[in-house]
Length: 393
Image (cartoon, rainbow, N blue to C red):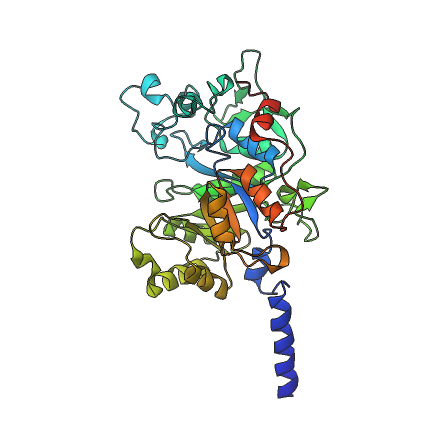
């Protein structure tokens, strides 16, 4: 009997090592995300103004598996997309609201935010990639990114202003229309929850918004496990059980995600850029991994670092030994991709990073294609994609 049990355990271990899915709840949820996922960081910060309609439409059409966003909440409880705590770096807030340029996102109403230009600052900082049509791009609301992922764009009037209505309860209703430049990719959404401590109940609000939009995999008809991540050379992640991932740097936020979503959706615990070599200390990395597992995360997101590597081979090994996976942020060059992927390709590849959060979706899609872990590459240059989307120079 003991010999039979040992043989069964050995067979199970061998099957798991060959890429078979484990049957534990944690690993089942982890399998909702494709290996070597291309995660478009803020849409792109390189080819278009970050976190704008242009950035996300570009990321979708370039073939990202996921589009990554950062969510804050306005003074009047609208979920908006912004990375920083304030609008100072990426908008003209200093001109529109002098003296308030360093005020937090949460101190502005949505109607005030609608007055901001989120595109011109990119043109000033990046004259070689500037486009006249980036001027006046809006700060987005949470729903915008999901509708873009579905192949839509913001509906606008003849003057280019977005069409919005407000009901008697004060709730805004945003309108969208089919994007004539949509090429059929259907990415998932990678949601970073910002400053949970500052926004009490934001996880519950996100849950409700996902349900309202038809994007909550825990509500409605259960999605089949057989839906493919790619279909006919088109990304299809947005139609699978892994259509969303929630991530945060906040430990309180991580515990809130577990409480609200019940360890049934993809989740990632983010680790800040290491400042010293203490990050490599075994006690530190062990504690990070233990906390991530305790909160039901399947992934650890860590910075590629500069002097101090956020995903050393030792740390990556520990993450994988613990049954977790690692996504690295944020990729800018092929050299960085090579470092965190390693020398192999196809089935012989053993990358340190299981997915790449990238500012250069174009480069990362083609890199994975060249390494034979992705069946297709990009179909046009980044500039051609922007032009096809109507962003003229």
